[in-house]
Image (cartoon, rainbow, N blue to C red; front, side):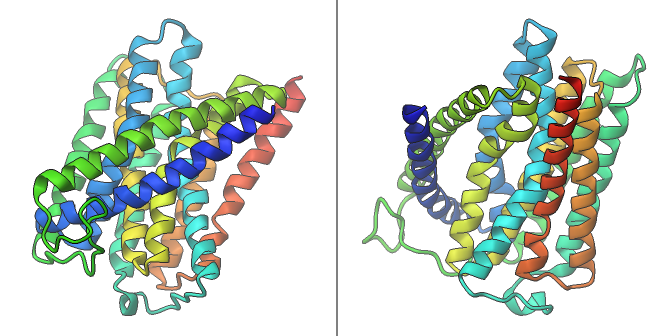
Amino acid sequence: MLPTCLLFLLSAAIIYLSCEFFVNGIEWCGRRLDLGATAVGSVLAAFGTALPESAVTFIAVVFGKTPAERDLGVGAAMGGPLVLATLAYAVVGATLLACRVSMGTRLDDRGISGRRMNADQAAFLGIFAAKVALGTVAFALKPALGVLFILAYAVYVWREVQRERAAGDTGDIEPLKVRPRSADPGWGWVLLQTVAALAVIAGASQVFVAQLQEIGTVLRWPPHLVALLLSPVATELPETMNAVIWVRQGKERLALANISGAMMIQATIPSALGILFTPWRFDRGLLASGLATALAIAWLWTLFRRRAVTPRGLLAAAAFYVAFGAFLLLDSAGRA
């Protein structure tokens, strides 16, 4: 157990340090592409950190040889949005409190568009509700609908890039870490740092997931409990770390945009893979995760709509994850 705990802590530390290099590199990518800060967080950073877990889902649902292996992919497609909508936003709130930063009720004063974040939450909720609804029915043409989720993400990316093109400002950027004395590092150095950091994040995340699963085994938790409750925490750790780093740098807009963009990816791409390659039918645990996610998004949507986002309001989103975890534990105990 001791080696497992040490590897768990070491991999988490490596992920955090690698995210420092990744967010620095991705900001320089945004400046090179003339993108605004929100698009950098919602498109570039979110897409980069979502690649490893999307690959895991793809391998599980396409090459899985047993229903149990494919179910792990479906669980990941549902668990990711749950963690992002609850724990990731809560971590941002906790970090804001720790840094003694108050966003107050006037979001635009901190460069955060409440109207825009409200629209993003509403769009996510609509797409998420559609994918949960598909998990409750069976019909011959359901696999073909997976393509619509891919198209939905393509439209989201196009919209984000188009409305941020005019901004062309990522704000103050620290020097590129691998070229600290260069005021204008070349594309090669920017890509080298960003891709290398992403590769380390992917590798360390796999180690982190393995240790988390080992801890679940030691605790004698059933596999479906680990897949829904613990594994998504590990796979969404890079997005959460990115948000912490940006909040510490005073870039709340990038932090919130990164989580919002990651949620949109998790609501579309892994879901599309699951719908295309599996029966996509939900049991009680998956339906409960869908309900908890929807309630968390409804809470966030209300906050952004009223322009009443505060650190404590974001922190309260964790309650939906706690409630879901309590349900899974009670349900598992009832089946035992």
